[in-house]
Image (cartoon, rainbow, N blue to C red; front, side, top):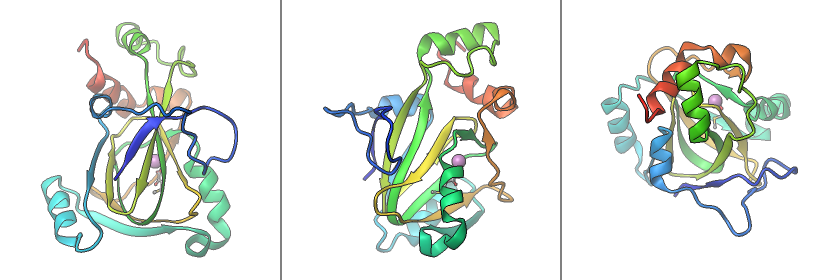
Length: 201
Ligand code: KMT
Ligand code: NI
């Protein structure tokens, strides 16, 4: 089952846990406040339940990807680097882990920063604000995770070096990532996301 905790921000191999000592767990309310959702569906016999969630939420497309040296071959290292670059998507990122696992890091903006953005619309000014915190979501087989459109995130395999996952999608798959920068900050999906998590709205 998925574990959520604050990333320790220490340099080193991205595939290590990067858990504070002692750990700083993130509670379900906090995940809810940033619109991250997760379920646990045992892999054994998961098909019907996964179909149920897909139907209920209108996820009409899916594929299976194996992120491993064997699955991706020559492009493994390059892909790993790309996934770990902070980015957003214009659609939800929905993943059901079949085998292995990994870490999804999602950004949580501090409240003052969030409030400033809403009231002043000064998106680019604070683009690199150090007050953004990474929350690390440690996923393994059976975890179903929904990362909302417009949230900054990144992904890495863990020390198992294997993530076999179903990627679900609403319509035509758009896997493209918009890396963090001026353009991502003014992206309508980014602005919509910030509005959706705002308490002052
Ligand atoms: C993404 O966009 O971050 C990914 O698709 C990560 C790979 S799926 C575990
Ligand atoms: Ni992504």
